[in-house]
Image 1: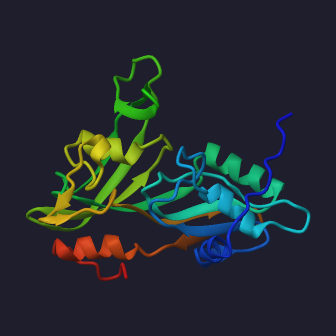
Image 2: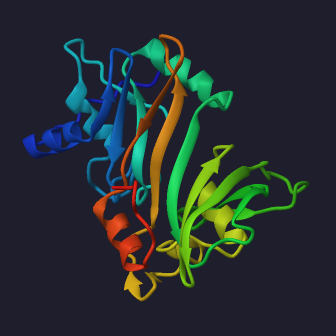
Length: 248
């Protein structure tokens, strides 16, 4: 049996920061608005991950919330943790049956054509050096995983667009690779060919934000939680002339 991990030693500043990211909490779940630049779990950088920071919510019995899904390090937004073992099991089954509905906002250099659509492109995971990548694959290629994403253009100019993305499957880097596969790599996504500027303004990071999550709740029914995009996302969208009304 795997030995339990010792609690992370957090500073007062780290504890205050992670507590300030809470957007919903009840007896079963904890929902946070993760900042960009923070690994969800297992980052190679010798710094605390979000998983480590959850020790700020440890109970008197030594248990603390556990993440039930992940966001890429440079993706900001809604992330869900279970506060109890039964809640973790319940949410794990919900993920397996694809009952979590995730919605993201992203910036791209031009509106997709057509402006609204569905991408059904299998993806294959590859290890290149110490890095994991995904690439599009033929349906009959060994290891290929069926993958589906929806996209919708919310606003656009001649050289920029704000899009809403919804993954119907949960592959690593799915939205990033799917959008790159239709020639609309996400701004700031150097790994998959995204532009590092938008309408002449530099992109500070991967311009992807998890804006909304709907999930079945252990007590019954569904809950929907939302997180507004952070200032760096809004600033770049504004600089590109994209409407951000309703996003701030």
